Picture (tube, helix red, strand yellow):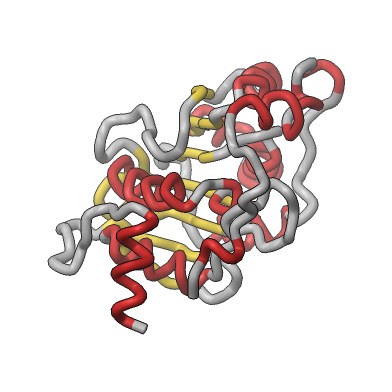
Length: 223
């Protein structure tokens, strides 16, 4: 499959659009409190498979308006918030989360180049994130998520699949699962999300991250 066909080439991906459009409701944190996401029960089922506990350091990628943080606070308890580090490349989103969740660490950063040391986190969440990423950014995210996890750490990747302007990279779960395995994960899941575990030893079949062109060329030879 040529994934360029399901990417939205008319959408101008970048900080400015997310700052001024997608997250415009977050400019004034006092204007509204964070809420559970529309599909929070689905998201919770996914996160439950990570087996969170009070000893885990947790990285939330694409924190946005804090939906996933609200969910963790409600379902796991407020004490879990101090274990959370949240990232988003949108400054309004990070400021909003810092305002409402003083216990967490929140950082402005792109998920393709996470500003953390190797082997930092026990758990990583990327719920409704990959569909927002240009394909090359998505691939780098998969590999960098693997890097920042501790050996034995787990990542939950749940791709959004609705057709919206900003959803420029709609990938089926089987493709994300395969990419996670190529990055070194032991990855499984067929419920609409993938749970990946960082192997304690680097798998022999692990491949270096590829560009979109290299990825399409490699997979065209296999088809």
